[in-house]
Each structure stands twice: as C-alpha cells, then as structure tokens.
Length: 464
Image (tube, rainbow, N blue to C red):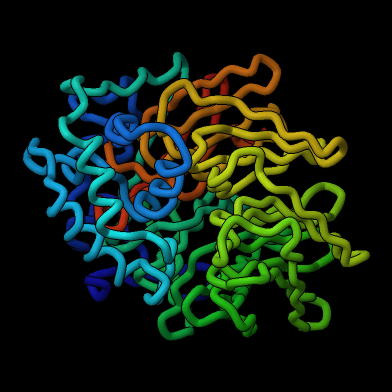
C-alpha cells in the first residue's frame, strides 16, 4: 500500500504526496463527509456515553472507565452485540481476553492489576441487562456560523495520535502504528509522508519549535527526535523510557515524561544547547492512588514550571526547573483519571477528569480546585486546550463523539459534533493565528482515523 504513493521533490527533498482524490490507491474510500463541512448533527447513532450512563456512578465505575475505555469506545455493539445483552459468562470471557493484552504483564500495561474477570463480569451483567431506551442519540446541531470539516487519514490501519500546526497552516500528525509522520495541507486535502529513520519508531507526540522544526516523541524505541525542516534530516536522543508527552519551554529545553514508569513518576528534559538528557523524580507523598500511577499529560506554564498529571495516580504535580522544587496535589475526587490538561494565560490548569466526567480548574496561586460538570453523562473528557486569544477552553471527549468549548466567563459549554461515531479524540491543537481548532480521532481497534477542523463562528481561517 505504501508503495502506491507518488513521489515529488518538495523543498529539495523527496517526500510522498497523497492527493485526497487518489486516496483510493491507498485502499481508503473517503466517506460522504470527507472535506465537506458538517452543517447538522448526525442522527440514528447511539453514543457510547449513552451506554456508559447505564453504569451507576461511583468509584467502581470510575476505575472501570480508566481500565476499559481508553483504546476504543465502549459502544452499544460491544455491550449488546446484535442488540442482545451479554451473559455473565460472556463478560467473563471478554475481560479474560483483554487482560493479557492490556494488563500489567503485557507490553502496554493499561489495565490495573486488580481487575478481576469474575467480579467485573457480575457487575457488567447486572447493569447491562438491556440497551438504553432511546433508539437513537442525535448529535447536537453544529453551532450557528461554525464549520466542521473532516479529512480522512490516508492509512486506515494507523492511529493518528497527536497533531500540531505549522506556520503555513499545515497539520502535522503522528502515525503511531505506521511509524511515520504526515503533513496535511488543508487547502487541497493532500498528505505528505515523512519516514522516520528509527525502526519501529512509534511516534506518539509532536511539538513545533520557533524555527519550525518538529520535536517527536518515539514511544517504543525510547527516543526523542527532531525533524529539521530546512534540510529534512533527523536527530535523535535516547531518553531511557517509553515517553508519553513532549513539551517545549522558552529556555531551550524539551520536556517528556515516562508513561509506563512505576513509583516514582519520572519526568525528563533535553537541553538543546548541550545535548544532555536529564531526569527528575516526583515525590510519592501524598501517595498516588495506584502503584502504577501512569504519568500522562505534561504542560509548561507561563512562569516556566512544568506540570503533569497521573491518570491512575490521581495526582497533579509541578516541577520548577530553576530550583528543582516539586509540588504534588491529589485530585479532589478519587479515581477521577486526570488526562491531558492545558494551562491558560494566567497559569491556571484546566484538567479533563476522564473518569470523573468533569472539567476541573486548578489555580496554583491559591491551591484551589473548582470543577464543572459536563452537560451529559459519561462523555469521558480526554484532552483540553486553551485558546489564549479568546480564553475559551476546548475539550475533546472519548465517548460522546463531541468536542466542547467552555467559556470561563459564562461557565457555559458549547458542543461541536464530530462527523462519525467512534470518535475517540486523543488530541487537540488550537491554531490561534487562524482561529481554528484541530482534532485527531480514531480507535484501536475501530474506525479509520480522521483529522477534523473546527471553525467556530467568526473564524476566517486566515492569518490575523
């Protein structure tokens, strides 16, 4: 399939270009919404959030959501295949199959070690005894004046994990399973493919620096990489861990965290001036909620402090690069599952509580948390981004097929429907120059990935 890509010389280097019209040559058939703005909500599709709403709220549900809904949506077909509830025995078989793949003994320990097939099966059979009453769950209408445009990812077997926007408006995407980087030109829908000279590269996170170079975290190989746009060359550094997130600061440091590290949580940084990689440990006091805290989101605040979350540890922490001082803050709700936070212009953190179904704000100046409930149950907020130009907080969900914006002034949410179901949104980026928001979504296993552009009312898409 990859060999079908045409070759062109661009900026003096050979890259693969896939015009949208030729995606059929890559065994991808665009759906009817491809590159056509969505103007109304979808109907006839039941969101995974409706299914998960059948489970009673509480710690057991929150732990289940963290264990069993992070790779793909938990939709009606999984809970009620062919519309029929699974028996307790069926559920036991399902959980037993999943544990070797995602349990602590596997390569990707995503499921907690105390997940028991028997008790889990009894609990699921007790509450998933009938499908949700509603025959369909129509998505909200697209807000007046807004546009939502999907772009089908050219490799259906891939997982488009993270996105960034370059100075020209191109969208840089990590191809996590095909071990490559891609660039979408929104003007004509064409894709450029960029090979990574590291076997099994497994790119999962990307940031763009002031020179336009890409900083890419390579999970499986345990490396940090830089793609130099000017000459098309790559530099790599060993970081000694399977990293999750990458962030840049204004002092020339590139930050990362160890996704599958156990006690203690570890963060690290590359000093670009010296090429030296360093690490720091986050204290275990107050203690995390799990022995495998699973470090997740990472952010650099305006004051230079580095903030991170622990999905299973239930903690928010900071590290001061100048002094080495750390602070640790347990989340207000146990087993809330803080995932990918954002930092606003005032240094406040906006945290998506994946299992708690809340957007939570933390103010470092006061040490206070404040939470906001989402308009519907079990949306599984996964990632937040702040548009510092407007002050809006954008939230990608993993179970509702929605992106929300939240206005801190009015404390109101606005919903933007995605063009398909199974839209597990792992990453967002705000293009403040053009007033646009980009989302990457897909599932494993599940649907072919999509990159979606959201233009809120008033956004022109032009450089301001």
